Image 1 (cartoon, one colour):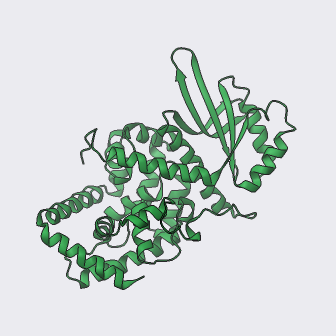
Image 2 (image 1 turned 180 degrees about the horizontal axis):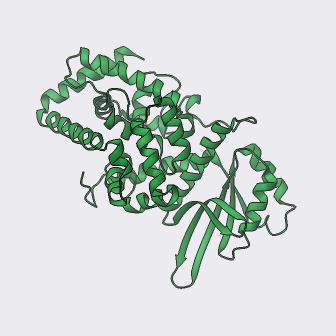
Length: 369
C-alpha cells in the first residue's frame, strides 16, 4: 500500500469535512442509522423474517441502487432460494459462530442472487470494525493505493480474499485514526474511498478507457482445464446470475435454473410475453467443466419447447470452439445455437451495472432509507 498517496487523500478528506461540517454531520448520522438498522436484526429476528421484512432488509442496501424495481429483485431472491432457506443463510452469514472465511464461502455458494457488493455491505453494517464494503468503488480506491491481487470478478472474491482485503482496509482505518479522524471504522473507510479516491483516470482504467490500461490481473483469464469443484461452482453461478441480470436490465423476465421442457433444466432464461400471443424464450447454458455432450443434449431438449427461439452456450474461447464443432453434427441444434464468451458477459454486465446505477442515482424515483 502506498502510504504517501493514502495520507494525501486522508488530509484532503479532513480538509473537505472541515470546510463542510454539515456533510460530516450527515455522513455520521447516515452511518449510525445504517449500522443501527442492520445490527438490530439479531439472528432470531432474521430467522422470523417475512417477505416484507426481507424487502426492507435488502432494498436499503447501496448495492440495490442498480435496480429500479427493487421488489422485483427481492421477489426473485425469494423464488430462487425459498424464504426459509434465505433466512437461514442470512442468519448464518451475519451471526454464525464459524470463521468469516467459511461463512462467506458458504453463503456465496448457496445463496442465489447475491454478489460480493451486497454480501460485504451487510457484513460491514453489522461488523464495521472487521468487515469492509467491497464494490467497484472500493476496487478503484485500492487500485489507486497500489494494493496487489485485487479481484475484478465475483468468482475471484473468495472468503479468504475478502478477509485479506478487510485487513488492508483496517490499515487504512488505522491511518485515519492516527490523522485524528474520530470515526475510523471500515464503514468510514468506505466514505473516504468514495469521496476522495474516485479519480477520473482510475474509473477510466476500470472501464477500459483511453487512459493507461488495466493491469493484467484485472482481466478475466480463460477457464483452467482443471478446476476444483468449489471454484467451478463459483464461476458457473456468477455467470449464470449475471446473465439473468443482463436480461432483466434489457426488459426480459430473467430467471435461473428453470425447467423449460421435459428433462431440460436451464441455467438462465430470458422470457418475454408478447401481448396475448404467447411467450418468447431464450435459454443460456454455462459450461465451466463437465461433459459437452450433456450441454448439447440439454439445449436440444430445450428446443422441444416451441417458445424457445434461440439457445446460447456460454464458456471460454477454447470450450466454445469444441461446443460449436460438436453441435454441427446435431440435427436441429446447429441452426439455433449461439456461442457467447463468458468474458464478454462479465464486461457487458459491468457496463450495464454502471448505466443503471448512474440513472437510478438521479433519484427520478424517490428512494427512502
